[in-house]
Length: 134
Image 1 (cartoon, one colour):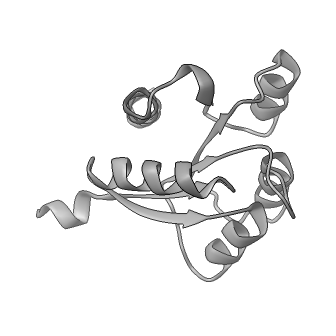
Image 2: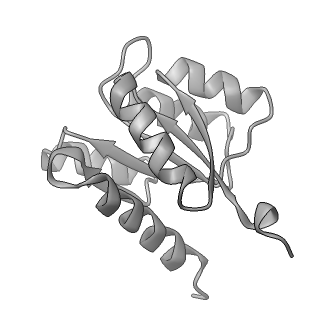
């Protein structure tokens, strides 16, 4: 089993191109196959075009379609049933966290209080918890 096969696909959705590029680079160094989108619509289009990410890491505040709208659409249309969806946002009111939970997100990471390395660690931890036998 070579390394290529075990790479997890991650779709990172953020309208901040600087952050997007930085996270894309960081995750690609950690055995992820990285795909990016700058808003919810673009992300949905990639999924509809056949991308099946293991992880969707998404911002909330984005133009055209925000993160919550994107999650609602994914859930409603069952677009990415096998992905682990994780919010990465500066919106960190409890109501936002609760809304994320109600939309089935596996984690809610606050950008401002996490370094990129910590974000990667949190994503890895969420994934290992998810993959662990119940």
